[in-house]
Length: 190
Length: 324
Image (cartoon, rainbow over all chains, first blue to last red; front, side):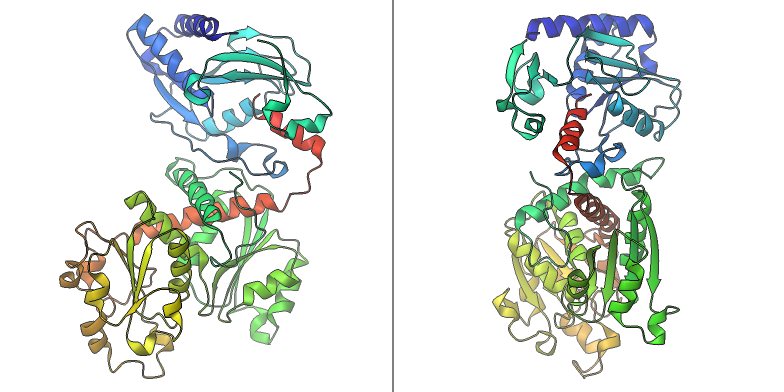
């Protein structure tokens, strides 16, 4: 998926979010760090362009809620959570780049609920690549992609990576190759 | 960035500038958890921490305990009063017995310099130095650095005066090492009887407070440790205040936006005048809040480190989950 395609996908998702939640003043878009945050900001801008009201945008760092914290080395760098509005009684749309096992979303739900009692939580992802390990599904999906477990889906965004693009990569070599730099992976399609 | 590549926190002296930077960055992120409606995250669920305090403490002990609770670690605190230490049990025996209960970390404060290092050699747990004798108090230096960095944006190039009882002060030693490693300019000041010989190899020494404070970005006042003042180090408390106490008049010699720090507990009217302690430039209470954040960072960085033996299969999956 190239930059234009990603922009059109996000614009469509913004309209879907708006269609489901007409009262945007009662909605907060919360991006899951790292790439969910710029994606949430873009969705908020598209929604403003269409509805005139810009929903609040927050950022969630789920590191402290992970179920695999002690198995990752080195430790992930903490970037901090920032929820600027009260989520009590609001509709919260969680925004992330890729939906895979569902464990990140589980951690995000746990963390979000510690901030208050939202009226409801919806989930928006750019790519749903399957292989769920938990009973979680997305409300708004940019694109559903059939993948193999040894493949990696990368969503690149201008704000973090310098370009907009979605890549499907295949790991090269044995499984432990996961620890190598992304350069060691081969691009199969984009 | 590699985080914190050590098993223990024994002192500032053996750390690299990058290690210090990682701890401060983690503390900066973790500080926000304290402002949440529910001040608790599950990061260290199932980890056990023993706080072993052979010396009295309010701030350090309370902030370690708060940090442990906020990160969901289980903790217990043992102080000398009411423990087997009073029955004559040695430090090592106490530690070994506690360790038989399988803690992941021991936080230790002891009046003997090197006590945490001794435990680190003989115990399996991660050891954190919460103050050892007149040697080091690393978490205090880290919270001071975090406070300075928040207000001044960076530590490099800051002029910092450390004033008071340098001789008995582990805070001073840890701070000198930390600030020098981070590129700040440190000057030490105290009465000649309370400045240990040889310290001038670490930082320049002056016996005049006015000179030390002149043009300073920050002044760290040290507590006059009245309980250790048996040797006649100075004639009287009042004379100490006149010669070395930080008064408003002396503060005016520093930069306009000077910060005044004190590790606590303060002797008001001795090393610091009340107007200064409660003045607009005082960041003494920020230091306390930052103390919790720094201790959370240490717990977070060290307790992850103990689970290093990860087989590659799991590591790969863990990494991948990051994008789900």
